[in-house]
Length: 116
Image (cartoon, rainbow, N blue to C red):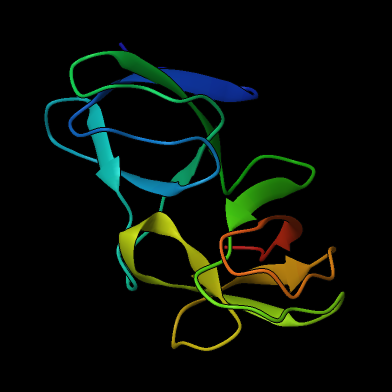
C-alpha cells in the first residue's frame, strides 16, 4: 500500500537526531543524518537512536528550519546542504533561500526550500 504524507511523517531514527537537522530515508523506513549530497527532509523533533522522529519533507508547502554549519547568513542567501544534516551558504547542492539573518554558527534559521 502506498503512503501519502501531507505535512510531516514519522520515522524510526537510525541515529540520534536533533530537531532542525536534515535527514535521509533508509531502506528500513528509518532516517539518518543528511550528507552534503543527499537530504529528504528536516527533523522537527529530537529523537534518540531507536525512537521515532517527525520529519518535514522538502516537497512540503511552506518554510523549513535548519541548523547553520557556519555563519554568517543573510536573508536571500542561497542555502546549500552541509555535512551532518546542517545547512551552509557554500556547497554544491542547493537546498533553498534563507529567510533569516544571523552571524551565529549553529543558529537555527528559517528557509524556503528549493523546488525539487
